[in-house]
Amino acid sequence: MIEFERAERPLKERKAFQDFLHSLQEGDQLVVAELEVLGQTMEEGIVVINCMLTHGITLHIVQPKLVVDRETGLAQILPLIMRLDERRQVRERDSRVGRPKGRRSASKFDVYLPQIMAGLKADKSVSALARELGVSRSSLKDYIESRRLKEILDDSWLERAKKNHRIAVAEKPELACTLESK
Image 1 (cartoon, rainbow, N blue to C red):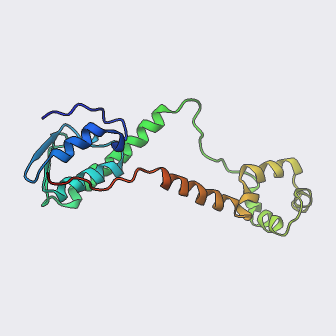
Image 2: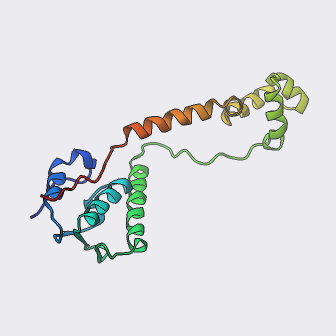
Image 3: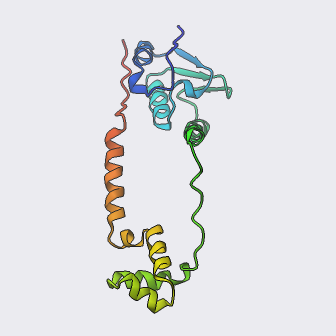
């Protein structure tokens, strides 16, 4: 049997592929050109391979020449699965439009960071800190904003990260091994 559904869609949206996987039985063999045929993300690759191995299905991957069955070691499978994530990152990077963000450059205020943080923690104004350090108030204000130092002090960045993580977890497809013997 040959399955033609596009692998760019998430696994949970690939109904024909799921039906095909459900039709496989113990002892069946599946040949794919490359691992990306099974899924585009590391999570999808892990789910599909785990389900196949759990149900005694042998997977033949043409590129690289590898046969994956219950005796295959994790050391052989893991690099392939990790490559899925690397390719996903390359696709995302290549699809971005505009100037790359770049690295944060060093600043003359970096040497004052402990004093700046202590002053902000003590609720000193930016003007008072600038006078204390003998630097320009507007430049110090720009530095504090660009480095998000006030957010770091009041832990709002932590709350935002927790919230974003919760959203990301909720949006992840719940992919469980649903291959059943028919």
